[in-house]
Length: 277
Image (cartoon, rainbow, N blue to C red; front, side, top):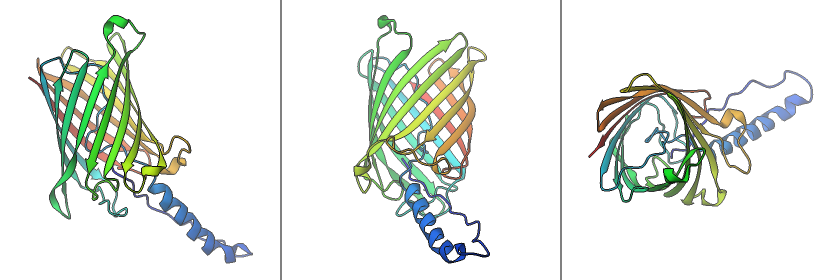
């Protein structure tokens, strides 16, 4: 996860009356509050921009996914030790093994290219996932992913992070809906005491043909579940794109994302190539 750096704006002080004396102090207080909120809201993960679907990798097989994302308009200033995201390029390798018909384990190698530092190692992750069997005949398809992250300080001020990701899927003919109501927290670092953040994600896909699905994806970061952040400090990002089946075992995902607030990245291009073998 990457932490946010939000820009503060000033609308000026009143020109007359008692408010003139209190405005500078009030402005300082507002800036301080804004800065504190900016460091307590997590951004949508810019290294793996993906809504998880129900199915796991089949038993005995591997799946290699390569995530390539470019932030065309991102944050411009350091937020503590965390570098600005503007013009960063992210390359992540995700290798998943199907352990059983219902259980998989994935490992991640996360890298980046920053304009101020060049090519850089970001960290690594470990992610087990399990799904409910189809024989249960539930009204929706369910699976559950957990993820441990070990990032470097230039990309996340907490050295160990944890993500709990329920996956809820429901097909409606050629339309498919996927929901990822993600809960995330720091396990080691300055924010370990702050509890869980709510980071919802959703995907609406339409099957154009046997080889192409078009989709609209949403990624949010709303702050602590016990005390959601004000609207201006929340992250809301929308990606248009799709999935192109290049062969039986190779899928290309593509998308263009736009942020609805200044709290997170504003323009992001993503590509993901998946190879099942």
